[in-house]
Length: 143
Image 1 (spheres, helix red, strand yellow):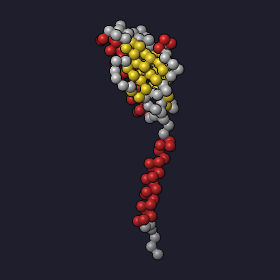
Image 2: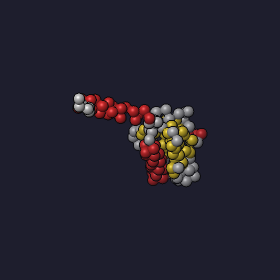
Image 3: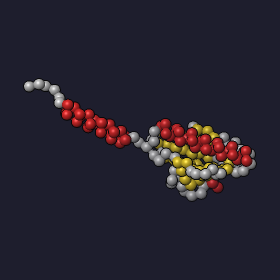
């Protein structure tokens, strides 16, 4: 009697293996990947820098408002909102005067380049990025 596997048996094993490869990895992922989190931090920093530049160039106050409940933010003077990664934990540290509710806060930039200051922390598991806004200079940095 010949030994070995039939073509049908091999195909069944390959199909089961393929299904396992497509189903199992999402079970192990926790939240947001490092690349997505870093990209989100850079995007938020770019939005804050844009708001600062807009305030200086147009001689008007400009704000970036963050809604933690919806994980969205918007820049005054620009249409639409931007989304933050749904799997990320987001924490705001804003000036008390810029806290709109428990889930909404804003960062205000003034025509002289200064701001209300604060931080946005984006984290997922052990990964963490802090976008820092210096109150006096309005400088935006990612740590």
